[in-house]
Image 1: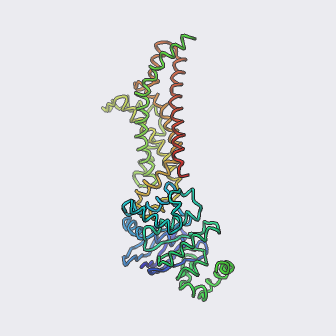
Image 2: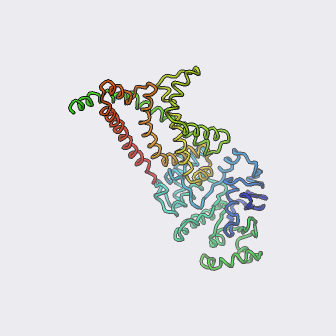
Length: 250
Length: 219
């Protein structure tokens, strides 16, 4: 469904992505792991054109695009097939929870308002926040805001949702509610690409794991074999340092 | 003393009447046009549009770097020598709106930049075009931030309109000046017109407070 080839990105002299390849099939839940500064977030942002990659190609639904040359029109069109969940939620501060969800439907996709409201309410119900539909982001907790952000993502019925460290900005006691929503989505067959530090999620919810370091993919594979039989020494070392967290999360 | 008081009472309406007929229309019209100029000049900079951005910078540089009074004189007394004749009121509107536009452009630009980048990114990821994202998400938030400093500019403009007296616009200050000349009581008359400006600005200050309260709905 989605394939990225040889994606490259530098910020000044710093090479952040050194030619990364990635394949995501329909219904895949891919966890991207790696230490800070490994380029995971940049990879995700380049894939949705929030950063312009210096090189590489994207195949989406059989259509080929060159990252550096893609037109604004194609970017807008492709973004309508995807959704993005940010680390710090980025809910529209001047819109209520429901308006946050319907904005992309009414304005982005020209859906009639009544239908958009209905779709939006269903999405909020799914994340358990229908009763907060008229609340502004400032009136919601971090966990609630992120759940609204997920509702905003699913309401547009995207082919894939990108998650950029969706629980990193949350207090530990609030991560559970967000992960639970993500697990439900995964169970329903939503295609998801998740940059995360949540080893429990990577191990038990995702079916594929990609491990990145220094702008390159060190290892990728099925999640159980990745965790049970890591092939690369670097992966083993990484998992070792997290083993405390692993036993805790697992 | 009693004579002075009577003079003030008698002249009060004569000074006040140019308020609603001249000072207020001049202020509202100029500020409305200024806002359009300000948002446009701020947006082309925010969007980093190559040529337009430089034009905006040039416009702000020239206008902020020259006195308002000089600008009024250039347009009203200077341009006729180049064959461009503009009546006093429209000349004042042009100068005040272009002048305020330059200052407000900086206010709006700063407010646009204060909106977290994630707001624009989230809007674009939701399938909105850049223009839609700005209009529906970024600009409303920016204008809320800009509201107090823009109110400041509006209050400043009310008082600056008194400079239009120099190009024959009969607004409140010129009305007071004429009475002062006729009665030879400059102190009383100029204090009186000052008080009238103060009343106008007090109303605006109150309105600003109401406006800020309403804008606070989303916390």
